[in-house]
Amino acid sequence: MSDGEVEQLNRRWAIDGQARFEPGGGGLTRLAIHAAQATAHVYLHGAHVTAWQPTDHAPVLWLSSASRFEASKPIRGGVPICFPWFGPKPDDPDAPAHGLARTRTWNVSGVHVTADDEVVATFETRLQAFILTYTVTVGRTLTMSLHVLNESPHPQRFEAALHTYLTVGDIRQARVTGLEGTTFIDKVDGGRRKTQPNEPVLFTQETDRVYLDTDSACVLHDPVLLRRIVVDKSGSRSTVVWNPWIAKAARMDDFGDHEWPGMCCIETACVADNAVHLSPGADHAVNAVLSVQRS
Ligand code: BG6
Image (cartoon, rainbow, N blue to C red):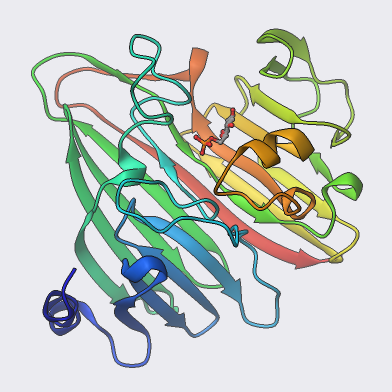
């Protein structure tokens, strides 16, 4: 995007001292938000939130130092939007993993400040049969809401995930609560279906799990950074938990080899059995709300 185009966005949407478009990584355009109680960055590339930091807290979202910031690649970290499929496309192994939304440039459709001094930014794109509207609300909490409308005359099925990368002090000491007793697809064990015991999720190896039929909020307990991150949600019946561990991190060229202990993905998702079916004209919203508490 040229300097002139960024200036045009600012003339239309900038809010003095609180929201301004600027060149970010790789020169890609991002919205820099300084709300009363938090800062954040959102790239137009993928409508990708890459940073959120409430005042008096350390950064909450993880972003790889090896991330590419290129128009054809997803950003590694923050909150990529996976849509309209999750993982590989079943009928097309050459299609990009996690769909098309995270590598396209979204349009801005609104920036405003609420009575509570939160900054709300809205982005839109049309993708296949769908109109997507993504609303990011930055304040003491970070709310991300993906609204999907089937604008076609045919029924449509989609998968979606707000693929949230959280910063953690040391994944080997962290635990995730909120998924006790639920069924999950274990992607590191041939896709076998298993039941989470009545215990937190602990991390001792590569972990890649799709938890099904769960509406619950999850909590990432971090005894190193002395905090809890709560991922609350609605319109989402699956939760994906992922850490690549040593070998997979080394295989990914946009993920630093030694960065894996510092991140944990808790993804607010509608995938596999919980994919969404929309009749013509119908809509659905997937919402994630992040908050952080000292422990
Ligand atoms: C997770 C998947 O959600 O995303 C993993 O469950 C995958 O299987 C990971 O490896 C990262 O995917 P990508 O396409 O961003 O490398």
